[in-house]
Image (cartoon, rainbow, N blue to C red; front, side):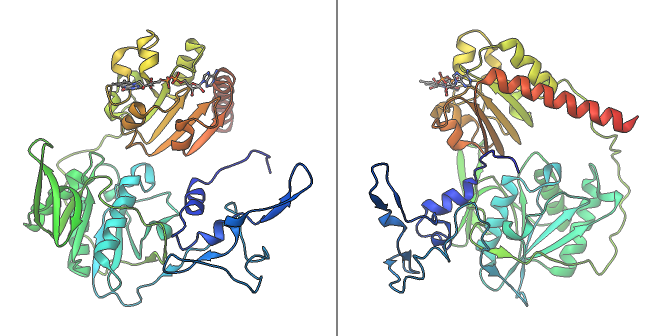
Length: 406
Ligand SMILES: Cc1cc2nc3c(=O)[nH]c(=O)nc-3n(C[C@H](O)[C@H](O)[C@H](O)COP(=O)(O)OP(=O)(O)OC[C@H]3O[C@@H](n4cnc5c(N)ncnc54)[C@H](O)[C@@H]3O)c2cc1C
């Protein structure tokens, strides 16, 4: 076991949220300790628990304060299990699964699906081909249908539509939810709507009171309409599931999916120069700010990682990076799956630009800065040392892979 302290931002969030059902379980086990001058100190906030109606209760039996039932944020806790033994209806979600994993956009959709499913409905996730995801249960999947086979892999929208039609015939979902994204859901959803002959609600950002509201008119207007069966939803359309655990029971299709003759041949991914990828489309961005002291080393690290370079406004204003690389409110709003911020403090204008990024990694000297608060993973230290260590680690990894292949 390494002695590196690893943070769990979700557990910390639950520990701060006094109305969360797991709040009590996330409180630190220590309620009294010896202060520096020998006096015993007590944490008055650690005593008691929040009842179901939000009022604080004190358990005078002592059992609750004894620490035996208390768990710290580092201990894994079981969320309450939500079961739907006999679903009255289904809400189907087709996640993008970029890189074989649920994206934050996919998770928002699963949250929306649970709003629509209520207590009686089940959320059915339909996945194509192989995946690497193991958190379907905590993301809110009640039933999981994996459509396996080479015909579904790669870019195969026509075949996927056939698969979705087979699911539609068998499960007759009350609603279909797809991410309205460039990663596949936007196109697949529109093709599927055409195949069903139904009008989808597109770019939906809210579903409420039997109405869905989507963006229209070049994104300048809202369009409200009765809830459609097929909803193509934007990111942040709902809160992701965070308070329950689900069964993610595997289900299968009872019929075989008809093969469609594809008019498009997928020749696979093409290697491109990361520097040539427009910032708004880059999946992996390595961004530098005022805390970067050795720009040569920064460029070498970005190259070793195969990442697209980005920058804070200060780095651009100081002439270290080109203006088109600026990330933020007055630069580009990026949607990378991984965003690494090196020596960037996390000013609000910068954070606005990375709001849609999936995983943020911060490298910074200041553990209290806003970028560290936003980050999913933080490395505290001198940027030059960390970048050099990163290059060494990447090279060692590649050399090992080469040796194994030889
Ligand atoms: C109208 C307006 C629009 C703006 N638009 C944008 C925008 O689009 N994008 C944008 O980025 N900014 C924008 N800004 C500027 C923004 O407010 C901040 O000033 C800027 O983002 C700060 O850049 P920085 O984090 O690189 O620098 P700093 O705020 O100086 O932060 C440097 C960070 O590096 C760390 N550090 C220092 N030395 C080291 C080291 N050796 N190793 C590791 N870490 C180190 C420090 O702890 C600090 O956190 C805008 C401002 C205004 C007023």
